[in-house]
Amino acid sequence: MLQLDHHPSGRHFLQIPGPSPVPDRILRAMSLPTIDHRGPEFGALGLKVLAGIREVFKTRHPVAIYPASGTGAWEAALANTMSPGDHLLMYETGQFATLWQKMALRLGLQPEFLALPGTDAETGLPISWRRGVQPELIEARLRADSGRTIKAVCVVHNETSTGVTSDIAAVRRAIDAAGHPALLMVDTISGLASADYRHDEWGVDVTISGSQKGLMLPPGISFNALSPRALEAMKRATLPRSFWAWDEIVEMNKSGYWPYTPNTNLLYGLSESLDMLLGEGLDNVFARHQRWAAGVRAAVQAWGLPIQCADPAVYSPVLTGVVTPAGVDADALRRLIHERFDLSLGTGLGKLKGRMFRMGHLGDSNDLTLIAMVAGVEMGLKLAGIGIAGSGVQAAMDHFAAHAAQDRSAAHASPRALQQAA
Ligand SMILES: *Cc1c(COP(=O)(O)O)cnc(C)c1O
Image 1 (cartoon, rainbow, N blue to C red):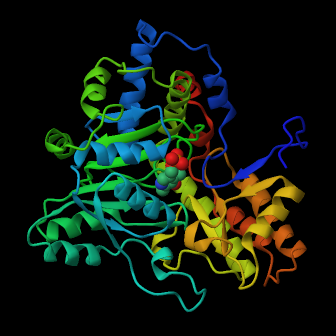
Image 2 (image 1 turned 135 degrees about the vertical axis):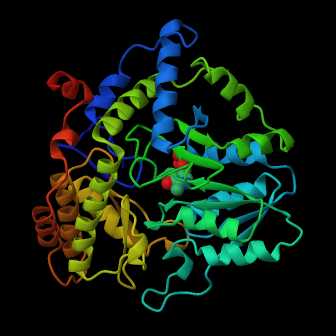
Image 3 (image 1 turned 30 degrees about the vertical axis):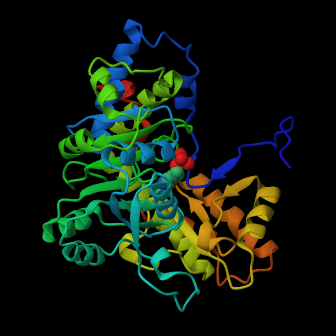
């Protein structure tokens, strides 16, 4: 039970794949006094974060920022581009893809949900929840759509319920190979600023993201990165929208303001997060997450437990899903680990409930905090009487010791410190 008057000693290990641990530097930036959102200082802040977030999405086009969770930005993407009854082609990679598909139904759209059929022999889990989007299925379906009724293809870049990524450039190529005019919409709520992502280069029309994962912020702001085609589609789309409407936001953002009160203190945090991420360099940020992920996977492999992602080409750099042996309730294991070691792990969602848990390796982490996470899980597995083949802690230590972090100085110095040094 949650006891707000009691805190265990030491740090809490928040190892769910979002919200991720927030760096102290960001928490401090967010504690500054709230300012007038129509005043002159605010405009400068607005322009700064809007320019910086475009660099993170790798786009020259507008990015709308909402005071809302990621789910709001999903709705914004659909409400701005679709009309009642429109057909969508969505792809079942896991629970987040499923929730987005349910939202499309609620909004009066007609989503078709593609998936690889069947269950997997190793785990009995749905095959489609262990692999990424199969672009050839999308291409075949679009080729068959001779009436061109499908208005958008919607995929999740980093499926947070499974720890599987999808090749977005390949999805774009599939749409182009079919010569189909559908928009491409991508949820990278948990991929942005942890996994390589290129809105313009990959020809994405709407990218959806959120604050509480790779951007290392608390929950509460979310994003739509737009393409010129998405802005054109908005003019013809007739689903009702007001709070989410891009036109007013994009217009007012030109001067750094919003049509309504934005989330001022979270924007202070975003400004700090952008300084950290762009100061480190996005390629270094991506390499750092890949290295962490490989260390955590080495631990899971040493335990002899299956990794939820069955295709090594698309392992997530953000989180690793671990399948528990048949008959072991993964949520009971998670509860035990939380009670004993103050370590929070991600639960198995939807079709994976009770069958797996998720280890996050994003946000304010380093080799030693991740080894602590691995140690907490390993002790939990032993306490729960789950047989393991070998020591994951040893495997993670060996991995991190054998693979030096790249560009350590840049990763730990603030841009201001770098400027002073220059
Ligand atoms: C976290 C997440 C969401 C939901 O975002 P909320 O902020 O909880 O509304 C959607 N999609 C993915 C891939 C996510 O990781």
